Structures are given as structure tokens and as C-alpha cells.
Length: 275
Image 1 (tube, helix red, strand yellow):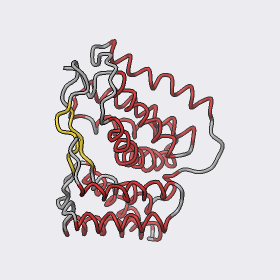
Image 2 (cartoon, one colour):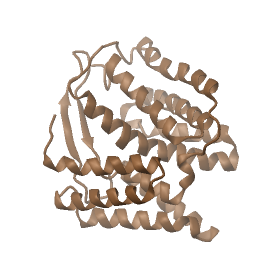
Image 3 (cartoon, one colour):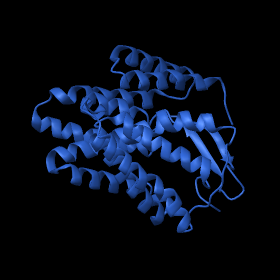
Image 4 (cartoon, one colour):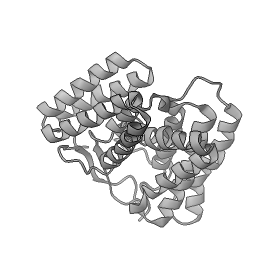
């Protein structure tokens, strides 16, 4: 693990995400500001990156109150802004590499991991523009969620059967760092975008089946760098996360299932893939 004093800026950022899920807006924004100021002080963020974030967050904040014709343009801007943050295309960020070519087990390929400062802001931007991403308080369909979980987690042994993975029980000493990063900085941003924003928006216009299908396909295509087989499995996993979001009406439930799937992959199979 590669840790230094500048890592403290991810603590208020993580707490800001937790407070946002708890609908505690003021503490969340205060912690977010501390993280941004800290990013400047620790030289993990420069003025260009800060301006890009502020502009995106401001447009997101104004979006719900805009006239319809301007609102569509604002949503398109935010869609592209999110993609740029996902792909780390916006300059001004020095994300921290905390794992450098580590090996989870003898059959696994080397794995590197960053603490990203840009990607988590997708969640905050979408939350300002589209507060409904968090879902609502309708009753959970626990039976449907359980039935969805079975084929979802079956994807890992299916990947083994197809030769894409191998069983490999490992508990690396950096598991806790992986867990915190994956849960709060990765899964939250991805679920906010693909399920909370894309799926929910399309579901309102074309029905929930179309919403789940398109969001899952886009989620799969986001993994194109790992090859077509990974795209196929990520798409199927996306269907699982999408159904969980649909049947729970809560973003945090989809985030939890996404994280548990990734964590099970780390603990029980070759990660991120076999040699």
C-alpha cells in the first residue's frame, strides 16, 4: 500500500457521501468544501479541476429550476460532464495510486488501484440535478430482490465455468482499503449514474424494462477495456443491479449489492482476472 498524509482529504469526501445518503445536506456540503480545499492544499487538485467541478455542480444545482428547453440542454451537459469525470478526461486532478501492481493470489494478474477525487463528484452533481436518484421510501420487494441476488452472484461461478476466472480464496492485507474505496468512491458514483440517472430517467419515459436494459448495456460498454467477455458479464451484472434498484427503489441498496459482488470477486476468485 502507498499511503501518505495527503490521503486525509478522502475522509471528509467519504463522510460527505454518507451524509448525502442520510439527507443531511448542510453537513455534506461542508465536508465537500473541506475536501476540495484540502485537495488544493495537498496539490491533489488545481484551479482547472476546481473550476470544472464548480461549473458542473452549479449547472446541476440550477437544472431543476430551468425551463424545459434549457433543462434538456443542462441534462445533456451533465451527462457529458459525468462521462468526462468517469474517464478522467478533465485535467487538474492528481488521483492517488494506493495499490501498485499488487497480486491478490498466484493465479491473478497484477492489480493497481487509485483513490479518485474526480469520479465521486458524479454523485454530487447528479444529486443536485436529479434528487430522485436516491429513490423513495416505498416498501422493498424483498422476495424479488432475493430472487435477483441468486442469478447475480451466480455470474461469478459461471465465469469460472467459462474459464474467465478461477477460484482463489485470498484476504489481502489491503482488503479494508479496497472495501472503503470500492463502496464509497466507486460503486456510489457508478450506481448514481447508471441506475439513479440513466435507468430512472429512461424508465419514466419508456418503462422500467427499457430503463434497466439500456442502463445495463451502457454499464457493460463502460468495461470495454477488459474485452468483450467482460462487457457481457458487466452487462448481466448491470441487469442485476438494475433490478435490485427497481425492486428496492433505493440507490443505497443497488450500491450495496454492487459492492458485495465486487468484494466476493476479490475474496473468492482471481482478481481482477486470471493470468
